[in-house]
Amino acid sequence: MDNITLLPRRIFAFVARDFRLYVSYRMQFFLRILSVLTIVTTFFFISKIFAGFTDPQFSQWRDPLATWLTGLAVLNYFMTGFSSLANSIRQEQMQGTLESVLLTPINLPTIIVASSAWDFLETTFFSFLYLFFGWVFFGVHYKGSFFLALVFLLLTTVVLACLGILSASFAMVFKRGDPFGIFLGAGSALFSGVFFPTQLLKTYAGSKLGNISLILPTTHGLDGIRQVLIEGHEFAQVTQPLGVLLGFLVVLLPFSLWVFGRAVRRAKREGSLIQY
Amino acid sequence: MSAISVRNLSKTYPVPFRRLRAFFRRPVKDPVEALRNVSFEVETGEIFGLIGRNGAGKTTLTKIVATLVQPTTGSVAVRGHDSVTHDEYVRRDIGLATAEERSFYWRLTAEQNLMFFARLHGLSDRVAKQRIRELLAKLELEEVARRRFGELSTGNKQRLAVARAMLTNPAVLLLDEPTRSLDPLAAARTREIIRSLAQQDPPVTIFLTSHNLGEVETLCGRVAIISRGSIRAIDTPRNLRDLSSGSEMVHITVAGGERISFAREHLDEKIRELHKDDKRIIDVEMERATLLDVLERYEATDERG
Image (cartoon, rainbow over all chains, first blue to last red; front, side, top):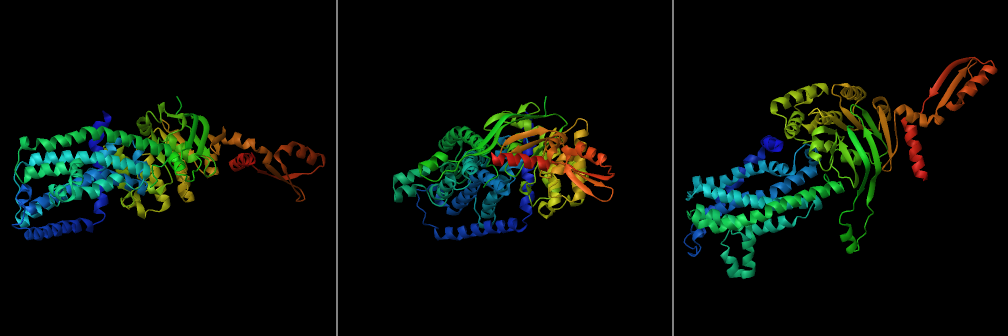
């Protein structure tokens, strides 16, 4: 009970800490905004090459710029959901501060939620910036329910955060060489349909390779968000990707928490909490 | 109920992936036995010292009490709470100050660092600010409160670690070489604070590890000597010194300037001799045994055997 009432204060502690650390490097914020603008502009010009050439069977891709910008914004968010926790654990281990944090009466799920809270706030801002720049400078319009898109975004992010917890557990025990990172990091951009329709994979690389996209939660999350924002689909039309994401969640959430608990216990047994 | 109760504690650091390494015929190191069947109790309000050479097991023992490392066998209880099964309760009751500089955020100021940890401990901002002000004043850190941790001197970093350990007024303070990098005045002031904590109401129990044996001798009510993972002796500093009284020397200067030196155990006999020879004693100097002598004695025994 005590932990639940103190949760907001502890999350705020991490957010305030990370904000202060972030602003201690003054230039990075402005440079990142500039980089988002540069990427959006680049994709605007690439989309001009494709004007009139899009295959009509890929309905979401009739407006390639909108599709890419949604893909980039969401991929950005998904990658944070996936990598944020492992990165914070690694960083705390590298800095040597993990022990000090674990010395406070704070339980593991709280560390998991709180240590990635700032990353999500930051990513929310920059993901929104992709859509915002597309709308303001290049006339990209979105339709459909933003609320439903948000449900997809949150659900996919939580699923990816579960994989992130597994990745953090790996970092805790093996320190480096994280297989989840390699699989999801490189795999999401290629197999999830961020830059091209996933159906093309089947056409050109065969059904075995094409089916890889089906086991990635990012594929279903991105598909749902695009169906809602670009095609204006309603709840009843997107129950399939929603159901798949819920399935991922039911399996991965308890499993990842269990694995993380065991990883911390193992690190405590080996006395390697601050080693990196 | 004891403040800290350590029972039959052993810790062997396992070799990670030992079987896997053996399977691939890679060289496999032996597990490191850091603690062997350690037992002792620390009473509430006691200043308890732990001394030993580097690698003797002091840090492992402190980390187990602090819930950061799990024992292999045996148990540690802090104010009745087991350090493994009720680790959250234990962490509420303890504060740990180590000489490890990397345990702070270097780009945050001293004040911001303390605020972060105070919030993790669940203190409200109002209470935390008040407490941080008091601690910065107590540890003479007010002037550097708004400086980044990375810009602080080693001594100030160490005092900040003590301040952090005291944030929640813990019932048990674990201090790992709290005066290691302090100048003599700051070290004396810190010792004074440690002593006053144990005397306040309710008293704080202090578990102190240090290489400064003089400090341990003046501060601690009882001292444990640890060597190669085993506790070799626990007693008051005075009684421990008496264990080595055979090595204590007495230097007597008699009229005419003659100086006679002998072991303390021969004192009575020598005094009788001088009296018989009608020699007048004009100065007596005692070279007392120190904890260092006691420590060296145990180390020598361990090395021999």
